[in-house]
Amino acid sequence: MSLTCGIVGLPNVGKSSLFNALSNAGAEAANFPFCTIDPNVGIVPVPDNRLNQLAELVKPKQVTPTSIEFVDIAGLVKGASEGKGKGNAFLSHIREVDLIIHVVRCFQDDDVIHVEGGINPTRDIGIIESELLFKDLETLERREERARKMAKSGDKALQNQLYALEQLRGHIEQGKPVRSYPNWDPANPAFQELFFLTAKKVLYLCNIAENDLPAGEGNDYVMKVREHADAEGAETVVACAKIESEIAELDEEEKRDFLGELGLEESGLNRLIAAAYRKLGLITYFTAGPKEVRAWTIPQGTKAPQAAGVIHTDFEKGFIRAETIAFDDYMSCGSESAARDAGKMRSEGRGYTVKDGDVILFRFNV
Image (cartoon, rainbow, N blue to C red):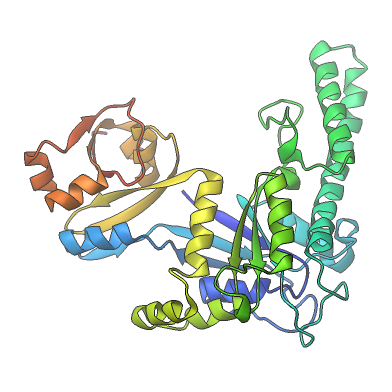
């Protein structure tokens, strides 16, 4: 499955620098607002040590990680929902993503202009959220107007839809995102095809200065972002975009040494992707053979036939069984055949829920 994360934030908070570090796509980064006009897109392989360990055992011709797509959406400004700063175009890009990564500037630097004149994470978050809410309110009011006309027919179902829209509008008008609405259900006929921006899940990334590494402890700006994130049940990742850009240029050995000098166990990329997977409820399973060892991303709770369908629709249509080995069992046994001989390979049917780390051989017939 394809996972897309949209990187948003005010201008000059470090979005493009972070994007460059994440994707090595060379997105332009400069010290003035609206440097990024069209969204830059980068496909990033998901780091997973389990994939490397499997490859060492199997020694396939090819190793293929799963991937994540990052979209660098141009900096939003106050009034974006009214079209300021190319706002309408920028907001439309957010509709296409699975997860919003909200980059918040948490460092002082007089050489880097702040569009609002100074560092204030709470205010900056509020500006972005307000613009998304204004756009959602505009979307809702258009639907509500049509629903009100149709409900005049006296149809009970249409009247119920109008009532649902009115209740949601009251929630948004209180400054609350759609994702926090207790009765939010995208399958509700009243809400279908509305694609609310604030219904998206959010992950906050605090962009800190190098001297605040490794975790930004003691940084008051980071504390403010965490307070906000905790209040809405979101997660916060702390990273230095400038350092991440430098890390991205190193080979694996140099990267390990550099991270060690900074007191970091892993890069911001790894922590960001892991947080994104947690937020979206995603897991990874593997296929392993002499031709290829490969990682596959699926939602937690996926049944075996649907997991097979991620590889090819024919696998799901003709699903017979899933011959499954837990990752730890595969590693301890040393090979698929050894795991089978040890009784660690299980034959799972249609009702099996795939687990994170499963190594699977699908049997199918079409």
